[in-house]
Length: 113
Image 1: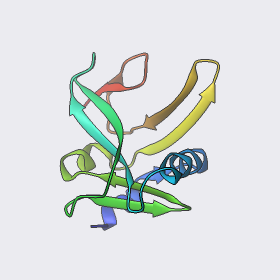
Image 2: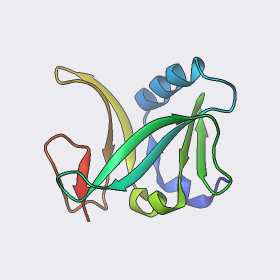
Image 3: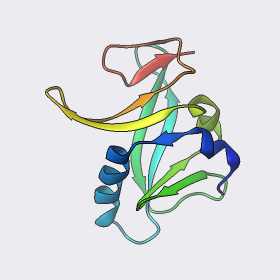
């Protein structure tokens, strides 16, 4: 399911390209799943995975060959966020700039609200 809430989540061109590359070797209908789980050094952490298909209740973002799925529980944590892919001296990774996070750890994958 796509909904208006996904309009509040930005996906950078770099992230779109990387997700497109990752999904190009997957079966049709596959999605790049972004979720928020309890854990990490700051209380919550981002998880990234490839799923064979979006679930019926997922919010789906489709743009420029990238297809992202976000489960309903994670969606509220990600409203207003920007999903990016960076390739720098520290390595390659997806990063989320989340205005809802009040603190985050040094690795950038864990945050608190």
